[in-house]
Length: 72
Image (cartoon, rainbow, N blue to C red; front, top):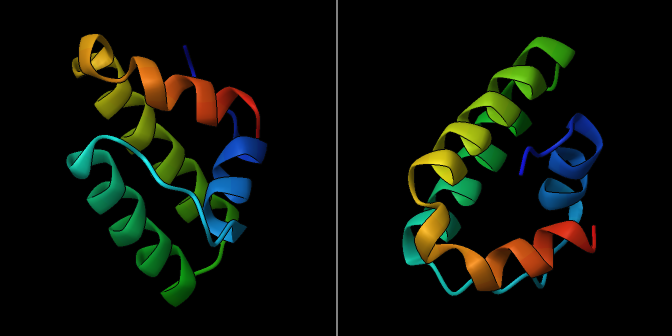
């Protein structure tokens, strides 16, 4: 599964997303803050790449969180 730029924007705009993976929650929180400091398309692309990299590495543990992300 690959997250799109639009899904990344929705991840950053949603307030009540609860992920089962603490590591993924921390990643999204940090990337959201990074993007808030520099809200450009380049930053959003970097954040999307970081999310996709994390999901690729930990896809076995991310099954429940995939469901949340695909609904965005």
